[in-house]
Amino acid sequence: MEDIFNMKLLSSMISALVFSIVGLIAFAISYGIFDIVTPKVSVWKEIVEKQNVAVSIFLAAMIIGISMIISAAIHG
Image (cartoon, rainbow, N blue to C red; front, side, top):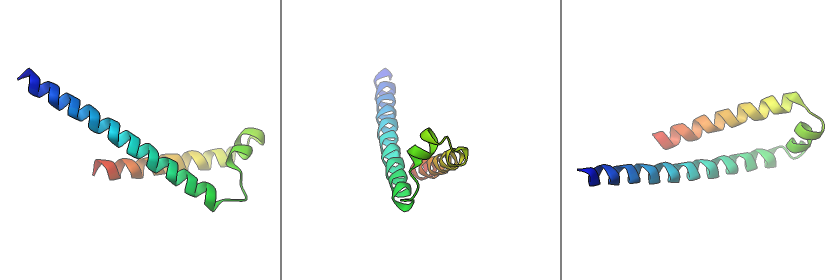
């Protein structure tokens, strides 16, 4: 009985790890697309050097939105 529990636990942990990696890859791709679509705006330069709060808020909203979409797609 304990072996079945251990196998299910291991299987769940592997699934969580795989889906986390898939989610991070999907997020990186979507951020790359965002960076390509907005060539005139250097996000890093705007946030770090110019301390542009509007770009920071927009980027945070994009991160949350993409994360929710990826989470829903993985969860089913």
